[in-house]
Image (cartoon, rainbow, N blue to C red; front, side, top):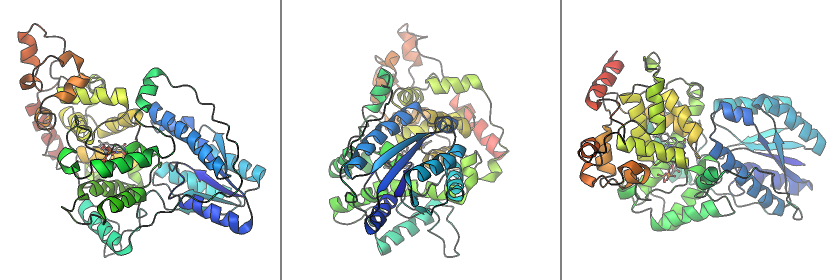
Length: 469
Ligand SMILES: Cc1cc2nc3c(=O)[nH]c(=O)nc-3n(C[C@H](O)[C@H](O)[C@H](O)COP(=O)(O)OP(=O)(O)OC[C@H]3O[C@@H](n4cnc5c(N)ncnc54)[C@H](O)[C@@H]3O)c2cc1C
């Protein structure tokens, strides 16, 4: 029997491990079985958000049914920690008579360690295949044979390789046996709050692909104009699917190609702005493999290791709860808490506010984001936080500090997003929405919304001084 180990790759299409296992099984007249390991304690240590856990398990249930239709039985194992996985898999291998294990490679440090332990422990061949990026992390190298540390040359090399080599998309494998019954997973019913967070992210067959197709058909060309406006649904909202591997980046390329007739390989080409974001995704995964310390709370730029971040629990709590007195920051943080998702522009704004205005470490923000996000992804989250904190690769220069008020004015000009998430400001007119305190005072409403927690101009100077050392 060929055993496929699913992790952050909960799909049938474009799955090199599944395809190879099916091919071998057909050649040898063997069966294929699949396994997923739930590791609650490890997930908690990785700050995995409850909504992301619920999302993964809901998708796993659907995947189990999809696999069963191909004649593949999915086993769900449960252990607390990654270190227990080798023994659990070994027992399954022996009980089911598996002759080889197949899985996709991981980019994260703990996950890579887990895979190495499994490889050492199992007495059958363990085959790992690249599959979560178009080009496997570590394979794009500079002329000197070194890994890229800066985005722009990385993206140039990535585009050149795509132009030369193209990409391939593996189809869903053909059935390897008669359809099997699927006993749905006994998942606890989500609380009403959790159910509301999951609702925008259906996991049924084809849901992710359908959203991708709708985005490229309807919104791709307007993406450069709309992508920074959080009140407008101008981005693809695919991140939870990509992070859980329900969708592969090759599927995104195939959708671009089908829509545009050619891939947008140069800046300015229609569709390029969106492709560029997928390249950022690949860049951050590439960095994680290049620099394992990024998975372990260390900055990309080691010179920033000793920065004396403030350890102010009250300021941090005000940021988490959306009570900083800066409307765009507070609206964003309340949206994150209530929906488990946040628009990219607002991720940048709130990350800048935490690290530059409150001078609180990006590590606190990174962990908090992970504990809330349905699309939590170590590579993108760490990359985004270190970018905002000016400690990362291609970081915002330390003297560039987002002004939260002007960011709000620019990207939520009428305050529509703010009013959606800050009901106490619902009546504040557009002219005052980004600095509502004087208007609230004048209308006898002082006190319904917190005063600004910092003076931004002073905080900016303090941040620059901190970095200058
Ligand atoms: C501080 C911070 C933390 C972040 N944390 C995460 C995270 O945990 N998980 C995550 O998937 N993204 C993260 N991002 C990146 C980005 O905000 C989200 O991917 C994006 O908002 C998802 O929305 P979308 O699917 O509509 O994206 P689109 O704009 O439609 O982009 C398409 C896809 O490209 C990828 N992508 C887009 N922007 C980026 C980026 N800047 N870096 C890496 N990949 C990108 C995502 O997979 C996304 O789904 C973070 C960004 C910042 C600034």
